[in-house]
Length: 628
Image (spheres, rainbow, N blue to C red):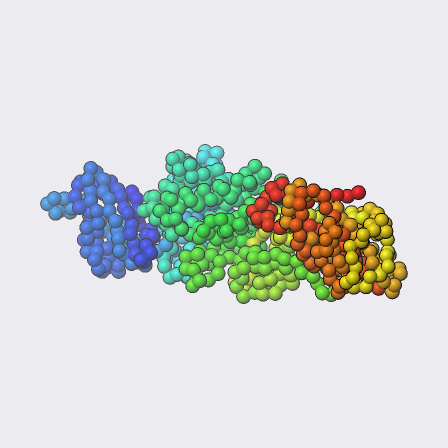
């Protein structure tokens, strides 16, 4: 009698939702008959398991189910096959079996474990690993003992020869052991780890289509190991992505991860199998593509919104033991973060909060300097955000000249970024945290959970809007009209003496002219021309610092007699409709006895779905601005 799947010495059997075992076992035998089991704990028979029938044997094969053992243990399980004469014909004993949760630990080198061995944790008896030689034992780094690996893929990926034990003598600490120990602390339940990672591999080695290759592909080998241990697991912890940080592979990463998660869930017949992935952190190697590296990081972060029951754990703040691998001590921090994320997935609100993520980015005006503050709100923060020293890691990507980011203030779950950018527009500006492959980032919450790398993200939410209009026709300084209440649309347009002018900044600024004649009060006009290729619903996004009145094609659409400093972009949104063809916006601005500077204007198209805005103006179209 030889067991081939489902039950082995020192293993952890996956528990059911009812907190008991339901392990399918199979193997070879020499006789036919009834398969019976006797289970003992501390030398005493477990109730209901004193030679209980659990299966059948025929044609030199036997199958059975060890069903109903409560979580915990250890248990000794005796099996026997009884023939027609009821005599025991074949028997064996499997000792030191636990019932709890079993996890796949998969990915590439940082899950495989390259941290220095002297940081290895002491083993905990109720945390076990299924090592790469297909044997269970107490989990102790390195659980990926590749020198004894059974699956052929590990030798093939090493040029046909497995590394020696001596070659791995100083390294081998990964996050899985710390994950298992922390899950045991959080749940009180025995934990099992299936070691399935291999260093330096791209997602193509994890293609579910390679299942048919069995142990000759990483996905096939992982599938085999799951099936060998009964086909049931509690979830997956995953650390991979560095192998796809190139311009060809990076765009495919999201779809490949979705396919992989679906495949794991099909294998174990669990459509909501919890899956916790690690966001790749830092690397100090030449030749790394910054756009591809940051793209993988941001795709990993965004997968939480694309895959249910999925979480992503940041690592951007962790130290390295070499140019590419998280150090042994910080691997334990990562393991605890993975466990906390997994516990939040499986236990809901009682399990705590999911990993920190970006909730919102917005711009606010600094009341003292008038410049922009970028406010980043984070979700799932435990306590408040903190940093060891000056909070560091944010950067602004923008066309020249780039605004200066000179301070970051942390307040509860919010980071306020103080910048030199004037309060005009940040439409072309992008925000990053952890830009490049080797940034310095030091912001966590009070539970030592890092803020994720993100971006580049638009600082201002994308809108169907034109750039600021900087090329109007402008009038001379004309006699005052006070608050403009009685100012009518000018019938004599020639009297305005409109002349084309190009302004260097987004503000159509005439303050030098207006201040030069102060306190004399005057009015100035701005005429902006545009053309629509079809009928549109539009809004004039207007900023001003004096009494103002606006007409569209001669029809009054807006008046504010109390406009005053400062002029703020987008202070007023003035809706109007425009048919196909050419149109004019005419704005009159009172000088406020020389205090006024000018106007901001851009035109927004209303009613454009967000999905089309994200695709760009080619998918919806804006008015064409006419300059002369």
